[in-house]
Image: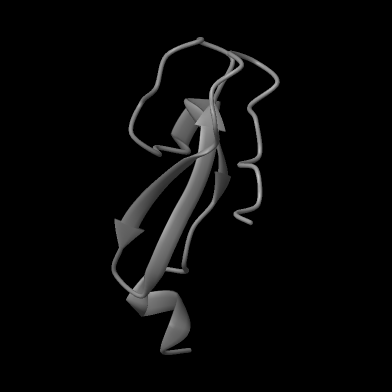
Length: 58
């Protein structure tokens, strides 16, 4: 039995998944109510993503 997807409280759709360098980005729409493709600047979307390569190298 497959688990049910987590639902975004803001729009009722499943949380979004996007392949990213180093892993996956998991996100939901932000305050603007628009799917900005997993952008987290200015709270466009809300979620988690792998750290950029420069941050991992430290």
